[in-house]
Image 1 (cartoon, rainbow, N blue to C red):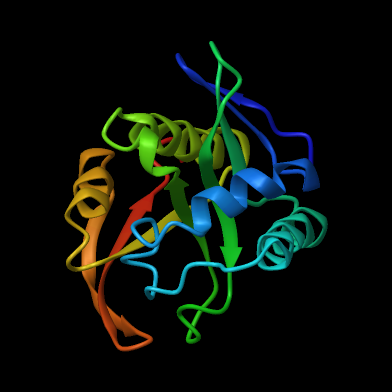
Image 2 (cartoon, rainbow, N blue to C red):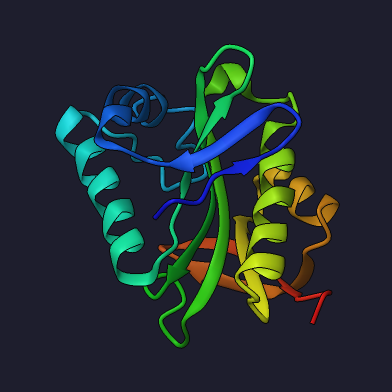
Length: 174
């Protein structure tokens, strides 16, 4: 996968095994996992497994989460992007928009910036008909971002005992 998406402040580039320590730093923080099942990683091996899953997405579907890197400092902010999802909503497959950031980068608009760029990439370049997203009902910040970028609330569902809001967006360029 060679996608490189550029925004005003960020590069979104393919994840590599060299991102392992940054993934571990991000995903071992309990605050980052508050709305992700409260199950932060506890070993580098778990972070390597996450990266392996992303690399497999690239190989199998030509798409997957991208590393979010600040242009001015080259710091790893987190990840964002699209992935082909088959596990969360078992009744159907879909393209999922997601993002996860290191805590020190929260509240700076990076998730919104990367999410908008990811939607544009999915609709304009990849010609997807629809992109979906989800956020736990209690995750105020993530729900706010999804509404702000134009995702349409489309009901709720339960995932691993957590009530989640479901969002969809049809390709506005189709």
